[in-house]
Length: 307
Image (cartoon, rainbow, N blue to C red):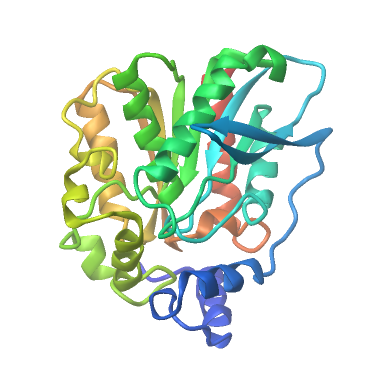
């Protein structure tokens, strides 16, 4: 199936901007380009507050979205996408507002440090440290410490999956679920979805390879399961998952493979594949009908697990 009508029009509009491919400009220029993109606002919420969370001697800025100020709520700790290089809590504000409003969960969006200035394991340490801090300070946040989920899109999905692996290994952070939106969990560029979606859509194989090189220190990092969660030795006893993938995405096959890996390890996992859309579609609420459908499915999943 080719891109659906709405996605074709969106891709046409993006190409009309004639922006340089991300791998041809500096990370700083990429971030300026990202910050300049128009975005539709998300819904209003009773409370949005800013929190600076100490992790390993530094402070990580976060934004907390609270859909109900009168209840102790479950929380989704959210890690934005952007190849570990671009993105921030402001850029994902619409998505996180929708997640909080429709799921009923509080959402804590994490402004982890970016690569290549901070390479692996820095961004993962930030995300894990923030999540553990939320667990340890749940009472002051009016959060149910027994109902903590992690989630993210693309590179954020990678970080969410890795946080779950590290939480299992450390044994100090009980997590209830993981919401992974087209996560990058492997570095096998020979997969069929990499070949089928090499350079026709919003994320190209060349750009994805460039993103990986910004994040890792050397090729040997590719064998680290905290870098490539698909390579983890034993996926049993991980938090249950909901994995959303897009048909026209280089990362399609590895998202499906991760779902199968969890299922084979007796971990409950729900896979939802959206046809006719490309990488990044999840953020296009108000533009693509399937973006709203994916958000609705995410929030339905969170409600079923967290309440």
